[in-house]
Length: 231
Length: 231
Image (cartoon, rainbow over all chains, first blue to last red; front, side, top):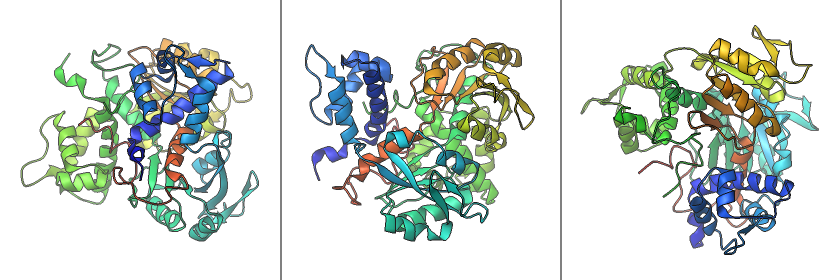
């Protein structure tokens, strides 16, 4: 195990924003930038940019800043986005269907290559050439296809069971849309998508007595990028 | 400005998970719990539970633990969830339609009370009694209705403009689904919903050379709750 395996997860979670930002800069034909310029675009300090990137090697040159193309390539490789990843989607209600039809994944190294549903009305339907399969097949199909990413879009009550089935088939990364805390083995990673929780944490700042006033100790947006800086 | 206004945003972001957990416990007719039991359910340490709650007052009694009903009520009030909040949704493509039809918001103190779209095919459509309005009306309608929460579900290229219009109408909290970094004034709070970025940060852990092995310094799930603990 190499030493740099212990990079804090909070740093890893920032890297996709770097990728997105660097690609936008390439689209604008920006070829180089200082850590200050990068920080401004990403929404973190220049020091944070330098510290984050220092985990992965030496980037940028004194006086010239970062080569955007080179840095984009490097971060893409660090995140293993220089290949296509298959993902299994479980759940085909309103949310699952929206996820299945979402094109943002494809453009960013992910392909929903298998879909499962419990509802007999959904099983057999087809989306972008993928046929919706019956949920009991999850473990076998995922194992056979070698899929290592699962997307859970089932009701909260079914989510843990679905996670267990995915993991039994070899899934090691889970994107969980169900509003429930999953218990996972140590070798499985998860991210949660929780819009309701996000809204519920915003209304804290919307009380009648703090109508629009600035609070001196908080920053604009409450972005995940700003906090948890690991300082 | 009271001293406890400077509660770290990372603590605020954990509170919705507490609310969700406490409500689940009430549904299971659990009446009291220790910080250890709570921590286990929430996915953080008992010490973290105690530290988080200590920002808001004294909860729980030595030996008896926390009164779940009382704590649920308290956290609900802290987050201002003891009322219904109106939200404005902008964007009515696949994603916007899925958001408009999502029932989780209603059950959790939020109501999408106005919807805007730029596409003439969408304007005039109706969802749950809400008519989709033409996007140029955003600022006026939001101001007139006193809406303070905006949900942005438009393409990245349009998101900043939409944010500006919402803010001009009085919106102070934004849930942003567009994959772009918004520049916001200091008195506006934002959360981002970025499933692609979440997936992109998971594949870091899925390299061929770290197939399923545990890494000693990281925890199971990479939950936002675990890190950024502000310790």
